[in-house]
Each structure stands twice: as C-alpha cells, then as structure tokens.
Amino acid sequence: MSEHTPSNALIPIAELLAEITRAPPLPVLLDRILDAACRLSHADTGAIGLYDPVTDRIDTAAVRHALAVPFQSTFARGEGLAGHIIATGATYHGRYSDLPMPVVDAMRDHVSLGLPIRWQDRLLGYLALSVAPPRKFRSAQIELIELIARIAAIAIEHARREEEERRRSLRFELIARIAGDIHQELELDTLLQRAADAIHEVLHFPNVDIPLIDSADPDTLILRIRGGDYKRKIRHEDRLPLDRGIMGAALRSRTTLLVNDARNDPRYVCPPGVAPAQAELAVPIRSADRMLGVLNVESDRAFDDLDRRSLEVIADYLGVAINNARLFRQAREGAALP
Image 1 (spheres, rainbow, N blue to C red):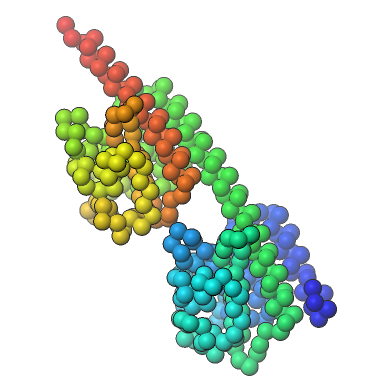
Image 2 (cartoon, rainbow, N blue to C red):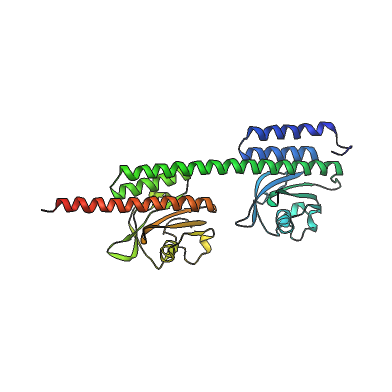
C-alpha cells in the first residue's frame, strides 16, 4: 500500500477477504465488492461485469449509479468501457467520452476508471467506477481499486470452482438415477419419460426431447417424450424428417452437436408457439452402430464441455435401456403367440 493510503481504508478490504471465505452466492459477493469499491473511491457510478467467452460479451452483475437513465446490462466487444476492456485487456483511466465507443451519454464528462478482472491469463470480467467533474481519482484510490479488482478475481474464480464441483456432483447423481431406472423399468415410454423428467429436474435444462427413429420410417424422428417446458406446452406427437433440424443433423453425422447460437443456425427448428432457444445440444442415442434416436436439450445459456460429456454418458445408458426394453417387448409378444 502507498504511504498515502489511510489505514481505515484497509478495513473494508479485510471484510471482503473474510466474506470470500464464507462463500456466499457470487451475486451477493460481487455486490459487496462493488459497494466497497464505491465507498473507498467515493465514486458516483460503479459496475462489475462478468465476461462470457462464448458470446464475447460482458454482462453486468452489479451496479451503483444515480443516473437518470438505466444502466446497460450487456456490452459487446468495443462497446462502452466494458467492451473497451474486452478489446484491449488493459486498464482505462480517462474521460468517458474519449472511449472509442461511449454508450452512456449521461456519463460523457465523467472521469472513468475501468480495470480488467483477471485470473492468470483469463479475463473474468471488469470493475468500473466514475466520478463527475471536477473530481478525479487520486493515486491512492486507484491503488485501492486495483487491489479490490484482484480480490474480485479471487472471489469469481473460487465461486466458479465451487459451482463446477456442484455441477459435476449433480451430473453423477443424474447418471446414477437413470442407470438405476434401466434395471427397474422395462416399459420404454415410461423409462424415457422418467429420464426426460430427471434431466429437467436435476440439471434445470428448460427443454428436453428424447425422440426415437420411427421403425416403420427410418428417415423420420417421432417426438413424443418431452421434459420441462416442452412437456407442459406441447401435448401432441410430432414427426421430424431426419434432413431437418439440429437433431436430424446429429443423427446424420452420427456425432454430438453443441450449438450455442441456435437462433442463428439455419438448421435450428423452433416448435410452434414457443420462444426460440439460445442453445441446443443434440446427442445421438445408439446401440452398437445403429442409431436409435436423440437426447436433445435446449437452454437460454451456453452449453459447455461438461454438459456435452455428461449427456453423452446418459445417451449411452439410454441406448442400452432402449435395446433392453425392445428385447423385453419382443420376448413378451413371442410368449403370447399361440
């Protein structure tokens, strides 16, 4: 710390470090980090945003301001102070209007301080503050805000690791649940419906489809088993040609398709009467080399590799379950013949 930094300024910082160890939800922690930054710098506006490398945008996570206009929630590369930090990766200290693309007209005369929040070489987000003229940021204040940005990086990385571990645990729980159903339920539609419901309930994917290839028409998918919003909103059976949709493309290519910008993908098919999804993940279900159907989920957030790998394991279990259920049905029908 600089010799000009007052000792009482270290109290909020010590409180923040203690707060991280208590592991509150990340939105709560970011709000408290921003509050401390604004108090220590006497800023008129403040914001913390999180960077999404999939969309190459920063989403505002916490904000403080007394402006007469709403604060923008999402910033693309180059847009405003957040977008400038995405583009340059560097700290900005200067007039807001001197940015290449200022977007908040009410802040044009403000002196802005924007710092990237980094963990090692990864951009996690940004911390931004501003003061109205004639005020400026003093060097001791900037030094404190730089320290708070480093604390924010620790908090975000710690929270993300905790969230990753929680997500892994949920996926193991789901896989065990579906694997157990394989040995307890041999009625195919009941088994698949329980799997679709479990995927929605445990992983919170809004939309789930488990369509199977029509045995009488191998070029068509039958969409009857649904979970989440689709189960509530779509009560009828649909038929989808294999030459349409991301699900059909996954079966034709015999590979998992992870599409995080589904709305702009020409293969995407949105069911009538529902809002388009942001992302779609389609995993072929197979038995040996034979394609049986698709495990398909949609979400308003981007999917990642953990989603892909865990659903591929579930699809493998479903392939075994479908094959077992069909063999059981054939044996039962054979036994019923005179």
